[in-house]
Length: 123
Image 1: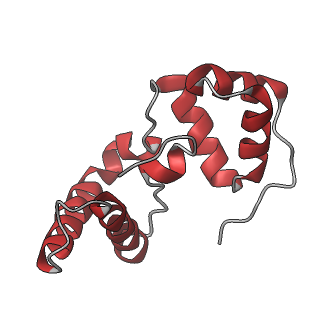
Image 2 (image 1 turned 180 degrees about the vertical axis):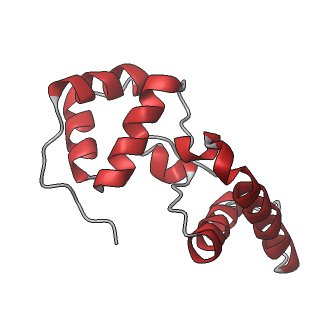
């Protein structure tokens, strides 16, 4: 289980997040402080290595490549079987299914683009 961090975010982390997202400083502070510790760690790593729209850096780990490919294929098939593919909001269904597969079958905690990008609205 992931728990919220009792540790407040550092000024350096807020500056990094602000530079990467362009969001106001105070919103960056409150957003980072409200994140679970693991999510915060992944978002800050993404802020260092990615541009604008973040994805979970765990996706870059070679040892998880097969798990991510399998989860992506199975999630896509599941959403298509339900007749929900290519509809408004279907990306959220796809991400939820992918996260479930990764968690249940591969014991991988993966954060969706929505979770990694709290200031972005996805359709």
